Length: 117
Length: 113
Image (cartoon, rainbow over all chains, first blue to last red):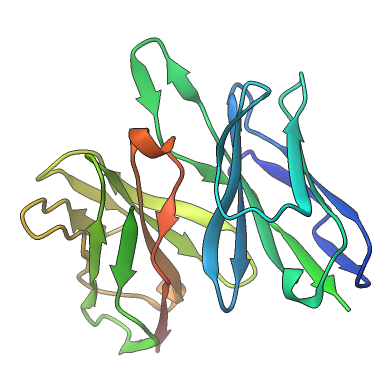
């Protein structure tokens, strides 16, 4: 158990709909990363938040957005869903930086499997 | 930009065989290197890591050495078990890229009894 939790585990929805995926990082971790795993694209970085602020963006579609709340949990919002958005979505957390030390290990949650019909 | 190339699978082995999965990388800056493992139906687990040249990461009988001269981080295990059947991902991160992970395509390993 990595200490990172994600809900829901599975999500089945229809095209055009909007869903929200939730992630709770490990206790004390300030950084949250979102990744998408699909058969054709592999594992792709979507977006990173650090202590409530967006830190980096990857291959994230404009239909997707995320935020990190004061309690450090994060949500990934996917809207106007298309068949191609079906994938496993992972959240990972990391301590971030403490003083001069940059912690770069990331700990992954179990993922949310999204199926768009 | 950063990229990781790893050998395509599947790799099928018998129990107690020697396993090698090749991984090479291209990075801007000085990367940290990782191997993650994904068991069926589960998330990714950090298997081992190395943060500087010539470092050897090791865990659960797996080893990988950070080779800067050949930009490689090959994963090895001397004697695999059926329980090692999984998908293995090589990955890197750089501080300049915000420590996001760049993954290889993954290598599926199947160990038969």
